[in-house]
Length: 201
Image 1 (cartoon, rainbow, N blue to C red):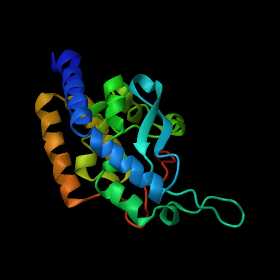
Image 2: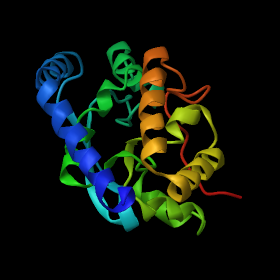
Image 3: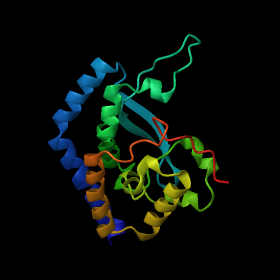
Image 4: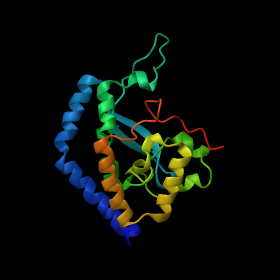
């Protein structure tokens, strides 16, 4: 019953509640991003959702578009200023995804939506992460986030697909709040962002 009906109700209740309670935060962050990082304020990117269907995911911009003399974008580390790092460490860059949850593209809890080009790189087992809606947070995020390897992350995603229910989802919500508070596992060691997934050996 939870998987077929109540999970979507929880998504709607929480996304509408968050947007109504924190509409002012969206405005403040939008203005600050415009001033500190420039336009556009929102970062939009195509991502695969449930059953691999493509949707547009929204995030607040956290990087600048700085290029070298050859007009090539600098590394993620060089394009991630202090304000961008603050947005990421507090997960405030993720809050536009509540609109994706409201639309039904995403859920509060589920495997994180990754890049479209990764679809052809998954094993059959790893591809099972698309059996459910992708989430703002998930089982892998509260068990290491970007500090664990891709293989570990995908194992946790599949574990969630097999076992998720109301109790596990509530547990993940509380663990996510804890992770945000202590700012743990935000980046991969030695990198500003998670390294590209090239496929499992």
